[in-house]
Image 1: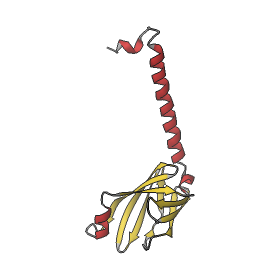
Image 2: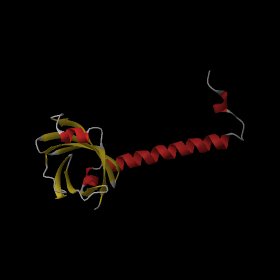
Image 3: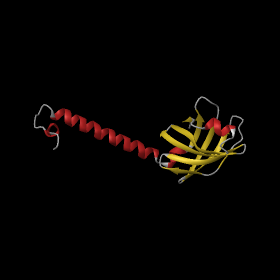
Image 4: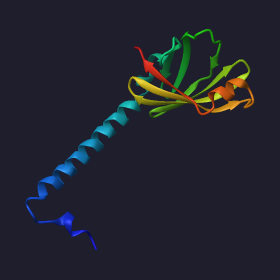
Length: 142
């Protein structure tokens, strides 16, 4: 049987129920707008810097794909394949000193992203050991 408190005819409780419903509706709408904003591939374009480092790269989206170009690679020589954008997340293969990693990027806002390794081979390589269960936060500079 439904909870009768939800269907009360008491005028004193109607405003609080309506306020709660309105707040939930506004929250759902703002989350939906934010999700739509993050799914625009154009939002990826720009210069991104790993937080608290000099490591900076340029993200160049083209439709649902993207390229990465090193701007300030912090002395690291790496190569990236063509990335794939899927809404507010993307994946790209990155190679560095014999290591190949599949990296996932998750936009958390139009100006921030969290990057983590989904896989890293060979798994015994020191680089793979260091990145396992780690993530980096990137800040969009432009």
